[in-house]
Image (cartoon, rainbow over all chains, first blue to last red; front, side):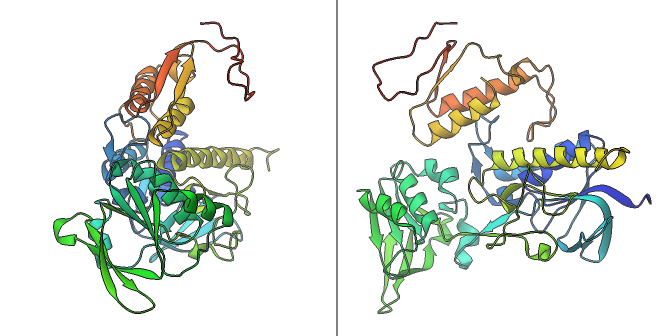
Length: 315
Length: 90
């Protein structure tokens, strides 16, 4: 096979992609990693990380990602900036288009993740990690004894609100409608919880206070009568869902009805030689450490696939 | 006392669940006896498995997980809490 064909191209530079790179590089596969729009993935925009094992004092998200990147580089990973815009995996070698460049590769590890949906307010950029969060499991602990708000009306919002009552003095769910989309069991659990209060038919129109660089409250608008009000809080959790970054995979590998990558037997996708890991398939855990674990698995599956491809009795 | 147990303890303790960890020694898992670790993401410097594990146990303990050095021989999943399983200290 021509020398310009890579052994493995990894798409994504979050915990999953970078861990796959460490393992692939240490297995001498000389991986090429396409960084994507945000080097370091979701953790690059996270402040304190207390639940990644190995850091008893905690670590800042960008620092953790920098360390993992250096580790991947030390074993020979090469990095390409930019986003993969199109792939063709209908026949080997696979093609990956990264902006103007076209890469050829024998295998592909897709780790482009999922993005938490936000409200689209300018202040969200400033306040994310400073009282604003999209992950109660990650950040709930920081809100001991405070009043927090949860935005959303689905299962995620119910789960986040219920979880947050372990820490917060009061949790208020803000929802645009007067009924919830959440399943009955999740609704019941939240509604029975004496620490949870409800604000119906209301949308968050502004988060306070970007000037202070921390969340102090929100401005709400009643969607029925247009009246605005201010509610004070120490933390705001946006729980309106996630969106997998899989647009460029459509028609090439199997995705589920919500656009998440479908994996079988570990990290295999519907196309042999294409593997997936991290939040791109994980709707349940979405943790740095679990994504790293899947990244390791994808690299090991990929290595085995390449070995079998080489052997005369292989697949 | 491996990485899985330490991480489970870290998550449950941090979710405010009273957490007790039992194992016969700090180095009974595969990681505990590894001389050098270079592929644990986030730890670019090479360290011993026991050193790395210690950081993880410290982290779980900092959120309230309690660790006891005891060897567990049998466990009962019966809901009768008073009928405690036979356990011989290791």
